Image 1 (cartoon, helix red, strand yellow):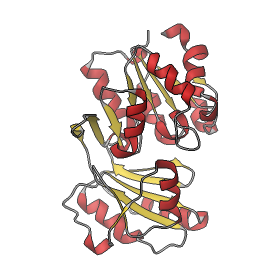
Image 2 (cartoon, helix red, strand yellow):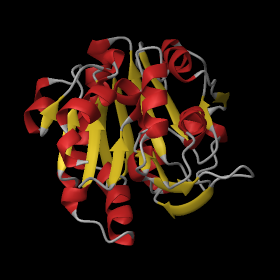
Image 3 (spheres, helix red, strand yellow):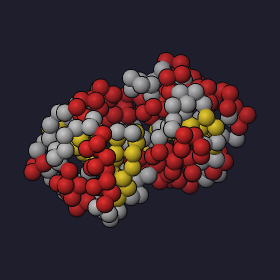
Image 4 (cartoon, helix red, strand yellow):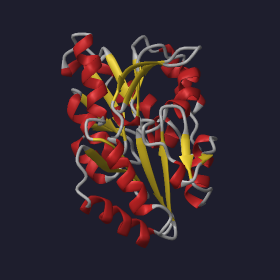
Length: 268
């Protein structure tokens, strides 16, 4: 029997416009099971979904870098795993805006920063409806915890070059993964989606078989390993589909609803 549901946001819970389809909202509001968002997004980028779905329990941001309880007067931090300051500094100083068509930005707990608006930040804004706060690289205060560095590519040749540069840096305590084909995100090594799920699993004395997860990207694979039943979206790549328990319809087709109703209904 499923006792807790976890879901990725972008390209999973959200449609291609970055919204939750009304049918999915209505269905998930009626499900009498706790639901946790597990996403690379920052808390402020999650808030609309938390409100739409009326979520009360712990939520997982920055791929597990931050676990928090949503509160009207400010989120209550449960666990915090930011990047090591030196690792964040090395990545940002190494890449900066040296490569055309490669956007570099970074996140603290409450803010999204970039040195300038560019095609990458504008694309992200089109998805999240949030604009970055502009800050010059030499003004960064590395004593303020940075939870994620985000690299977005519009020039894929340069983007692939930057990804290889970062991988070759062999940074200590860092997890660096694609969340989409043109997104590369850098977080603390322990900031993987399985971290937050394990916290909830142990706290509530749940068995692996009682956990269900939906996802579409390679950064969801750790999440899939941690739950008993994993469901890949129809728009997921072949690697993700190959390891999932089931494959459902796409994010545009209310794949979560389809998965809950027709794929794993016998487990609920």
